[in-house]
Amino acid sequence: MGEGLRVALVGYGLAGRVFHAPLIKATPGLTLHTVVSSDAGKVHADLPEVRVVGDPQAAFDDPAVDLIVIASPNATHAPLAIAALQAGKHVIVDKPFALDLAETRTVAAAAADSGRMLSVFHNRRWDADFLALRALIEAGTLGEITEVHSHFDRFRPRVPDRWRERAGPGAGLWLDLGPHLVDQALQLFGLPDAVQADIAIQRAGAEVNDFFHVVLRYPRLRVVLHAGALVPGADLRFAVHGARGSWFKHGLDPQEAALRAGGIPGATGWGVDPAPGQLLRVAADGMVREAPSPSPAGDYRTFYAGIRDAIRDGAPLPVTADEALDVMRVLQAGIDSAASGSLVVPERL
Image (cartoon, rainbow, N blue to C red):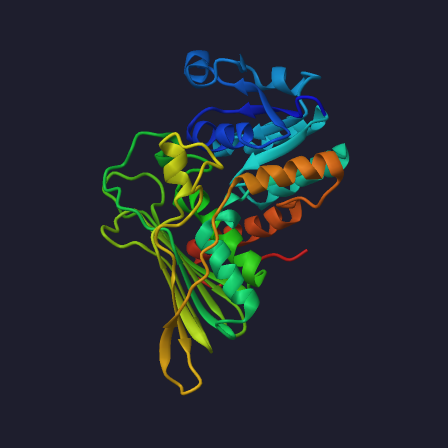
């Protein structure tokens, strides 16, 4: 395909600069052709060869562009995705898919009408720790899973001045980190029977939620999704319990830190977790003993390679619009549960 699929990236903030641009550039068969930004100097300091335009529609109307990546503030995801689809482009939307379930359906309908590909950047399916957990569950190593704790805690007592922290549509921790944790849970266990959520503001001066504790209820299984901004020294990522053992993981997948530091995706040692999980298994004598834990390397490029193959060869999408809709169903149920103080059943098709 010559230079490969040509990509236009809308937005050059944290998501665009740290995640999407490096991953697009590191994926064979993709070329970062255009960046939509109001600050051409900032973009050219990193990407001197890339065309910069200030108007998203200029990228949507460019016949040289094959794929649009929406990495702009959350409130713009749906209108920009719809405009790009209507212009005949394939589209990736950074998480969250949209602001609410109604918007999500509208974007999905626009994709169906256009006949173009639509996907959502749920990159943490390719975290090293999640790949290890998935391998353990699929192998039956832990037996029937009865309890999962999935944490993404931070210690950020000062409220930064950025759009995610200001009151307005799409802001707050539940729509920031919630999509990651929800998507991982649904990949392992499917849609829950009900959702019970506590979503709160804890920091002095905060305008939007900076804490959530959400329980996904299944017939026997309980999955607890938890994140806070006032958690010093606690680095629990997963605690998973089953009939045959438990698995504990501390510390985050290393890819985000590497990307922030300017690391090159795919470099030697990329995605190798320096702190693999601890596996405790119930032995034949009934005693609980430590056993070797799987420690696969994570690689966010898998998402973009899957997008390339889906567009070029008709391969299955790495993240489908239906899967992203299910994530939004749970996010919406969490919002409704926190508002009402009651259990909420996620909407089904």
